[in-house]
Image (cartoon, rainbow, N blue to C red; front, side, top):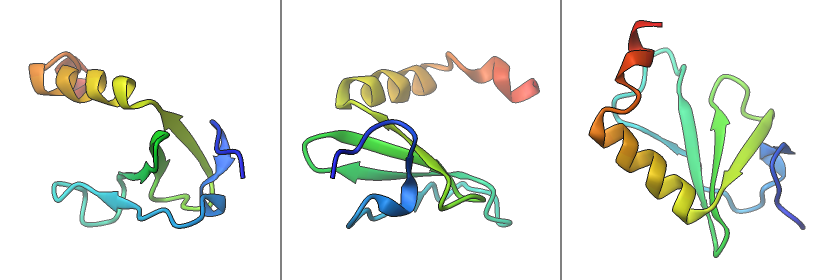
Length: 78
């Protein structure tokens, strides 16, 4: 199966979805799953069968580093 942006998250076979330990106790969070050789899939935990976004390892690395550097802190006040 071709995994691409917008694929129904439940169609990604063998995906081990996980979320941050800091996630909301009500389950409102983002979940991620490693894709063998293809990067990382991201989905909304409130809609587990909804669409998944797929990112390359380089895209995920850039996002994580940006988050660590505080590049998105202004969004917390939105």
